[in-house]
Image (tube, rainbow, N blue to C red; front, side):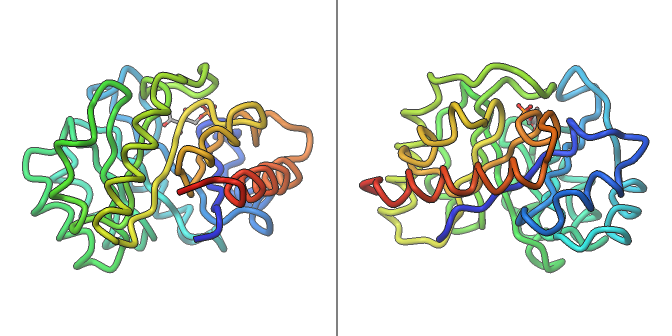
Length: 225
Ligand SMILES: O=C(CO)[C@H](O)[C@H](O)COP(=O)(O)O
């Protein structure tokens, strides 16, 4: 699959969300929405009512990343509301298979997210239940953190597992993805790139997306996976 770029609105202006989404509407593939509940992560952002408002105002599909304590309860509601993709965290879900199936049944892509210290090998058997594996490349909770290089071997391992099973599972990296780090992620096997501060911290967010995409495409073409 060609690399996809999903700007995170965590770094957008929350008072002008629709305008900031519009700024990347013609260059990005997804709008990445970080839902944080101040329990699973030490930060509070937005929830279903704002996602519903964004759905009415965005030409791009929403990629909802639920960093919340009770994804089993909430994830299906994001999918039913019309999110294109809903990711739950392996560390939080108590009934991941049921929840992933409910997301798919509601018509959304189902994602499974793992924190930097969570190994992917234990989730091998769940690959058939998901459309995307999200690897956090910072500790979840805040934008603008430094990329954790220590996660790169896990990106490679996840790509191997996906390839070994011959499944159409996308591999997303999230956290500290920028012009300095995106090539290493693409070389390691990532194909969906979340970037918050690297996009919304730029003078021209649309151009920042185009540059990230070009870098990811070039690195993917050279990669051996
Ligand atoms: O999930 C997240 C934090 O938990 C954000 O999506 C992520 O950190 C993006 O922001 P940046 O690109 O600035 O690191």
